[in-house]
Length: 249
Length: 305
Image 1: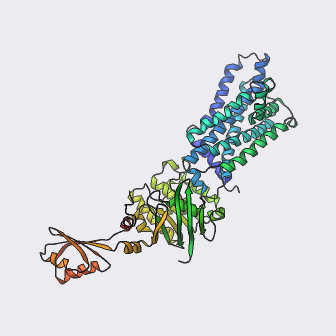
Image 2 (image 1 turned 135 degrees about the vertical axis):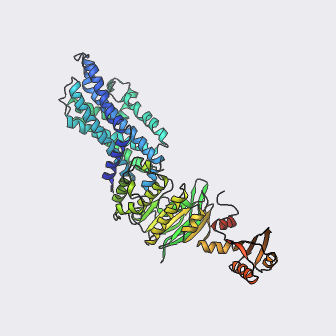
C-alpha cells in the first residue's frame, strides 16, 4: 500500500535541502528572525505589564508555530502543483506508487522540517527570551504534530485541485491566512460577535490554536480532547476528499 | 514469437466533444516492436495510455498480458515499463536516486548499476536531473522503464527533440530491448524511426487506424512505384529505355535519365535492358518509396503538415 514511502520521504527531504532557498528560507530564516526579535525586545520589554507579557508567554510561541505550519502548507501546495505541471506526477502515476503515498511523503517532509525549526526555536528562545520554559515540551511537540498534520491535510486538499503552480501560492494564502484573524490568537473568541464566533468555531485553525495554547500553558490533555477530535475530523475529511478529487495532470 | 500480448478491440475515447480515438483495434505479438504512427494529435498517446491503464476508454475491450488494464492496473504496473512523452523528474534528484526509488517500488528488479552502464549513464550517476541533456534524460527514462524487468515496454515519442546522433543511439537501445525477448509498443511521428525500428506498424489518423502491417508490406501494397536514376552518354539509351515494358515514364535531362515504373521486376528489367544493349552508365540509383510516401498516399497529406 505505502511501498516506497520512506525512500520517497527521505529523497524529498534531500531534494528540498538542495533547493537554493530550501534550508535557509524554511529553517534558518525563521529562527534568525526569532533570535533577532528576542535580542531587540528582550532587554526593553516591561515583563510584568500583563497583556504584553501574556502574549509573549503564550501567544508568541503559538503564533510562531502556526506560522511555520502554514508556510509548510503553502510550500506543500506549491510543490505538488509544480510536480503536476512539470509532468512529474504523470511519470509517478505510471508506477506502483499511489497518490496517497506521494502526498503522505510530502506531508512527512513538511512535518519533519516544522519540527526541526521548532526545536531550534525552543533552543533559541531558551537563550534569548526571558520566559518561563517550564512548559511541557514533548506535549507541545505532540500538539504541534497533530495540528500541523491536520492543517497539512487542508493543504493536501488545496494541492489536489489548484490548476497551476502560479495560482497555488495565492489560493493557498487566501484560504489559510484569513483563518489567522479569527483563530483566537489575537482576539479572544468570547469577545467576538456571535456570527464571527460561529465562523471561528468552523475553522480548523481555531482548534489548533486552542490546543497549542492550552498545552503550552500546562492544561491537561483531557481538557482538549474536543480540539483533538476536531483536528482529526478535519484530517479525515480533507484526506477523503483529496483522494476523490486528486488530479495527476 | 507467439500469441498476442496486447489485444485492443474497438476502443473509443472522447474528451468533451472531441473524439480522440474511435473504433481502434489491433494486436501486438510477443517479442515484436509494434509502432503506432501518425501525426501529432492523431490519438497515439491516448491509445497508448488506455493500454497502460492510465486512461479508461469510453468503449471497447483491452487485454494486456491477460489482464484488464483498468481493473488490474496495479498488478499490471509490476509487469510493464513505461516511458511517457514530456515527463519530468524532480529537478534536483540524482540519477542513481531516481533509479533507486523506482527499484524500491517493484517486487522484481534488475541490477541498477548494470542498467545504468548499459544505457551509458554510469558517469552521470551523481548528476542532478536538471543538468542532464535531452538524450541523457531519455536514457534515464528508458532505465526507469526497464528497472522492473518488464514483459512489455511502452515508449511514447521516445526521440522527439533529440539530435540525429542521440536518436540513433536510442534506436540501438530499443533493438536491444527486443533482442532480450521483450515486447515493445511505441509511438512516433517520425516515419524514418518507424521504418528502421518497428517490426509492424499501425498508421493512425484522426483517431482511426487506417492501415496495419510490416513497413515493407505497406510500402509494397500502397506504393509499388520504383524510380531509377541513371546517367549515360550513350545516344541510343533513350530509345532503348523507352522500350522497357514496365517503364511508365522516361524523362531525360542531358545525360541524366529518370525512369519510373511499378512492380518488383521493374529495376531488374532496367538492368537487363542496359546490359543487353551494352549501355555504359556512369551513375545508377534506385529510389524506393517509404512509409512517408505510404502516409501521403493514404491520407493525401504529408505527416509533417
